[in-house]
Amino acid sequence: MAASAEIRALVAEIEAATAAAQARAVERQNATYSEPIGSELGTVTVGGQGELRAVDLDTRSLRYTNESALADAVKTAVQRAERRARESTEA
Image (cartoon, rainbow, N blue to C red; front, side, top):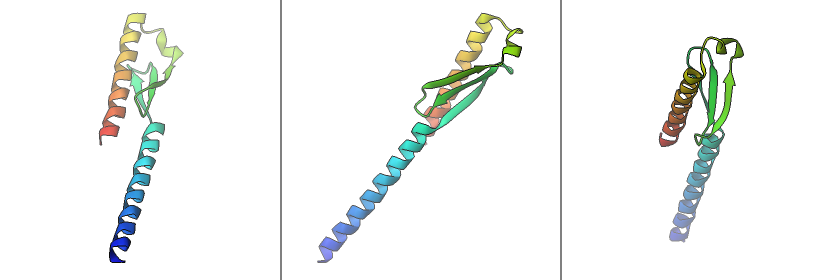
C-alpha cells in the first residue's frame, strides 16, 4: 500500500510539472518582443519563437532617411528583438 501511495504521489508531481512546463511554453509562444527602429523610425515586433510579426514605420520620420539606412535599421531592430526572444526561452 505504501508503495502505491508513493507512486501516486510521484505521478501527481510529474503531472503538475508537465502542466507547468506546458503553460510556460504557451506563454512564451504568445509573447511578443518589440524593438525601436533607429531613431524614431518605428518598431518591429517578433513572436516568442523569434518570428517576425510586424514592422510599424512612422511615415513622418521616413522622409529623413534613405532606403539603405532604413533597411539597415530594420534589420538591426529585428536582430535585437529576435535575440530578446531567444534569451527569454533560454532563461
